[in-house]
Image (cartoon, rainbow, N blue to C red; front, side, top):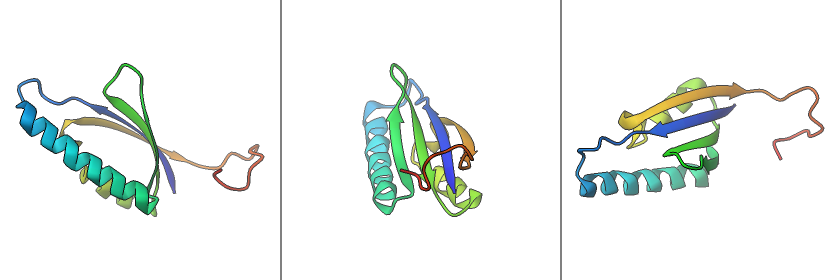
Length: 96
């Protein structure tokens, strides 16, 4: 199942820089692992914002929910999820 996920990050201003940097480093490693597994297919930064648009390829809503909750920055995120379905007018038979 493919999902379009927008993540807006809002780290508290009073969080110590060292703590924020540690969380970001753990988040990056987690994200890289999911990308290598093929579950986090794409990630794009939204220009001028601390936000991204991502495409996830997972087995279920529950798997996506679990993966998102596993993000170290999850407590500081606003997340919007849209399930994606192949459009009948698409000229492609796959997700290329």
